Image (cartoon, rainbow, N blue to C red; front, side, top):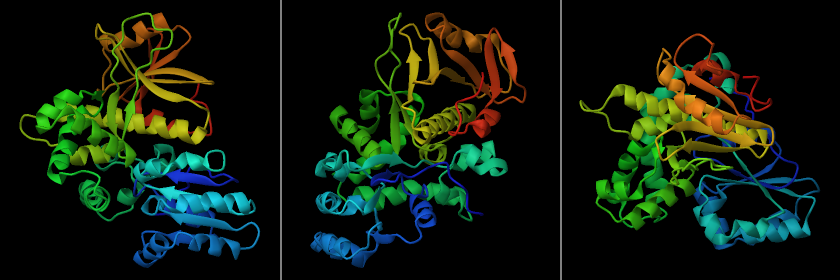
Amino acid sequence: MELVSRFFTGSSQSYFLFGPRGTGKSTWLKQQYPKALYIDLLAPDIFRTYSALPERLTELANAQNKGTIIIIDEIQKVPALLDVVHQVIENRKDIQFILTGSSARKLKKAGVDLLAGRAIVKTMHPFMASELGESFLLHEALSSGLVPLVIKSLNPLETISSYAALYLKEEVQMEGLVRNIGNFSRFLEAISFSHGSVLSLAEIGRECQVKRKTVEGYVAVLEDLLLSFKVPIFSKRAKRHLTSHPKFYYFDAGVFRSLRPAGPLDSPSEIDGAALEGLVAQHLRAWAAYRENNSNLYFWRTKSGNEVDFVLYGPEIFLAIEVKNSAKIQTKMLKSLLSFKEDYPEAKACLLYRGKDKLHIKGILCIPCEQFLINLDPRFVIGDI
C-alpha cells in the first residue's frame, strides 16, 4: 500500500503525540522528521538504558546542536523521563521534543501537567475516509476498521482479530494494569454490547459478575489506553429533561467488530448499525482534533426517548447528525432531528444513511454515509448542509 498523506499536523514547539497502537504515529514522524534524534523505548536495550539512567537524556541533549528535534517513542514506558525532558526544555529552549504515547495511564500518575505550557497535546486517529480517497470502501471499513496497521497488513481481518489480544498482552498484562486478566477479557466482550449505547456500569458488572467499581476501573483503563472514548450529553440551554449518562464507543469500528460476539441470536443489522455509528463517531472526533477549532462531540437524548446520535458544537459549527443503517428513509427517522431543531433552531441537521441519493426531506438534508465520510476534510468547515 502506498504511503497515505495524513491530515495530522505537528507543531513548532514541543508536543505530546498520543494515539492507539498502529495509528501511524511512528511512520508519520519518521516521514516528517527524517533528521531527528530518535529514541525508541520499545527497543529492549534502549528501554533498559533509560529506565536505569533517565538523566542520560540530559547528557544526550547537551551534546546536540541548536534546532535539534528529539523524538521519544512510547514515553509512557519510562515516565521518569518526563522530569528530565522538563528540565532540558527549561535549559535548552533551542531543542524541540516530540513525545509519543499509546497510553496515558502512567503519564497521568507521573503528571503530564509538569510540562503544561511547554508541550502541547495532540492526537492521531485511525485513517479518515478522505485520507484514503478512492481506496476507502465503506463495507471494508465496517468489518476491519481504519487502523493503518490493519489496513496495510496482508490479511486485515486476521490482524484486527489479534489487535485486542496484543493490547491485553503488551499493555494490560505486562504493565499489571488489572489484577484479573480473565475478568478484563470478559469485560472487553461484554462492553462491546454497549458500543454506541448509553453506558450502564451496573449492567456490565452483572454481565461480567464483577462489582460496579471494578467495571468503572476497567473503563478507565480502556480510555487511558486510548482504546475507547465516551460521548457526553449535549445539555446547553436545555429545554427538556435529558439523560445524564454518556455513550460508549471503541475507538475504531474494526476493533468493535473483533470484540463483539455474533451468533444465531444476534441480528447482523444491529451489529452493522452499531459499527456504522461508531465509524461516523471516530471520523467526527478526528475532524475536530485535526481542525483544532475547539469543537466538541456530544449526543442528545431526552427522558422521553428522543435521541440524536451526534451533536458537533464549537465556535464555527453547530450540527446535529442522525445515523441510520438503512438504504431507504422513512419519515419517522427524522423525528428526533426535528425535535432537536425545535429546541435549537440555530443548528443545522442531517441524516446519514446507506442509500445513494442526496435528499432534502422536511428541512433535513439526508446524505449517503459514504459520501459524507469521504467529503469530511478537517481543512474545511463541514460544508453547507
